[in-house]
Image (cartoon, rainbow, N blue to C red; front, side):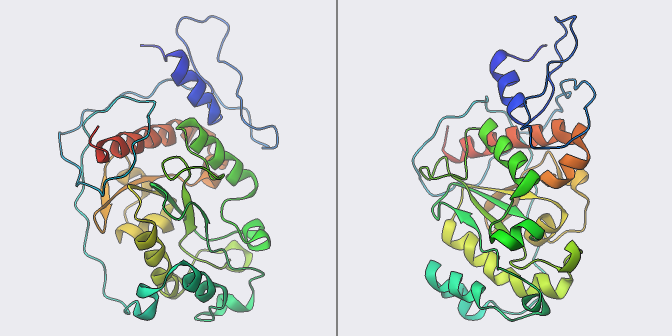
Length: 285
């Protein structure tokens, strides 16, 4: 069954090539931003749909409804594992937005404060219905103090646009809130250390508690590990609805990984569609 014109437009917004069985001219040209330097991708066929069991997503607080470009289907829900023992959140758990931002800006809880240029607190609508959790800041994020900038940020923006979302100023139903697991860049972009993640966890947990999103989209291994407390690889966690403190969590690949492995964009598109379905269900639609 070929893609509809609307689906083709959304896929192209993510930088995906669209294969059509009715066409003899080959795959359509990618509409990815010209600033991205990626290799030419092979033709992308529509991924096969997998059967899933019927479940009921836990109810979320009532918010204003927003339209969605996809139809609702049943998806599996995975019970949230217990969080590992760790230090208490302490006063961070009661902070409001100004106090939390000030705490992050002045944090010296680990050695990352010695090499950072800027802390990366997060951006977006503080009452957003969607929240994106990424990994650790990179060089550009450290320079600008904002998550997901550069080529990975451009791809994320295209992915969000494909499902009607934005990081730019908009209402809570359409503007996301974006945060990282770490608020400081690890030197030379190395992987975060467990003790660094532990020190930053209360900040992320408080951000989630303040935003109260309907859907959490975890991008990349370390974001997934922090939210779900699992060592399972991304590929085994995709296609399911997980939970974090009662909030549905959809996992997907980090945009930086998709830039290195562009053929995986088809799977990321499936993840976005699943997230939209879960969001619609949280509205009772």
